[in-house]
Length: 210
Image (cartoon, rainbow, N blue to C red; front, side):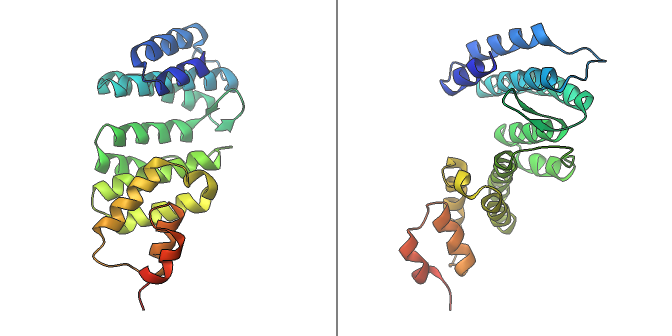
């Protein structure tokens, strides 16, 4: 059911995705004393998908409520973990909330939330951490904090170089910075543009400053 909800979100069948995800989550909802990480993980991921569906239809308050419930389950689970069943835990839930805040148009609030996100308490996949940096890069660019945006793009590349190469958010953010830059800022600047597919590889020699 979790994968079905995920698929429906990507097909933009948001109402159906939210309904199915919430119904499935209600059936397996952990109680206050239940610390089974797999149950908590599947429950939390279902709510992540439901929140994404709600946000995509403009229902920010509903998305916030769903994420708050997922965060409560993550707090009880205590540790971050990544299995075939789910990727979940306190840091994972915090990163999901930051992502939703940024996607709701609150770039500066998302950047503030990132400063208090808990450190990993277990296994958080590199691509999750890289995706978080891409979101912060986009938020920083929106807030016109371009040097921070570049630093986040570099961190994302270093964490998951192959994965970020195919993420539209990274490419769009990098292109925004290239278009806005008054001049090229040397090899490090152009290296990132090349990695994210914004500049062709042969452009490096032309974009570096003396």
